[in-house]
Length: 383
Image (cartoon, rainbow, N blue to C red; front, side, top):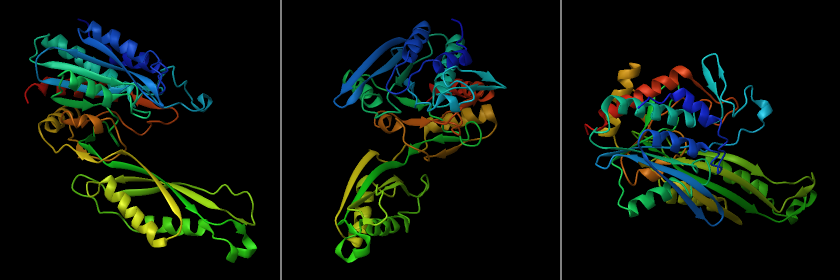
């Protein structure tokens, strides 16, 4: 069984234009490669009203436990204007020790590094390694996340398929490769605030009700004090105003309404319900007619340090010489679904170019991440 070349696989994956929700050939490629390594591959397509159909891949090698799963996604965000890239976003060009392309770090590079590690692990250990390896690869992480990982996990559970531990390959590294392993994530709440008033002439303000003034006061109340100070594993909750919209082209008209959007990333000191209560208390203190629409994309979660994170810390330290920090910062990921089914931890490439123009990964980092993943596999079946 020949080892899989991680760089070659990463380039082939980047050349698949798998912008959410398109499969783009990426899952076809992974299925071909994994089947060649002996994995049983299942394509799982899910639908839901109002959202695109999504293709997913679940592959497993082995029948017995423990079942160690690697989770990731082949869908990528749009590249934007291709002319703003120095290198074609889907050409996977190699330049001066870097691999360029959409998905290089988020997260086709990590998937390729892991599969290369799996191939070397199997080459060394053979099929009788005392457990099972599986991969859960979705095409719906960058999208609404409705027809992806969550539904795959539900279908597998109904069939009696279980995961014993899961490593998610999201780009968690900040300043250097593997300087952070994520063992949880903050909760995420997004809100749209609409303040209603009475339109009128700005010269006769006493005959109108200016919603912009109340909106500004409300936003000052929301941003003027912290929600909490954080905790041992979580940064303080952050509320960020993301947009203020009035849409008033006239200079002498008081508008009838004004809106603002804000995003809250909350620590374990809060739930989405307590965040919403906190927000409404401050809006009510200002008063007047307003509407608040809230969408929660995930509650906070924490997988306390334990055997899985300990194993990953050892693997990182052995390969890089420096132990990683265990953290919960950053945005949401599909780990928020997986944590209900198995212990999870997240480790991947540097995140500094994720979703950016000229997204890229260092070839040295790609190779080193593969060695870290292989060290994790070598130690996996000891816990």
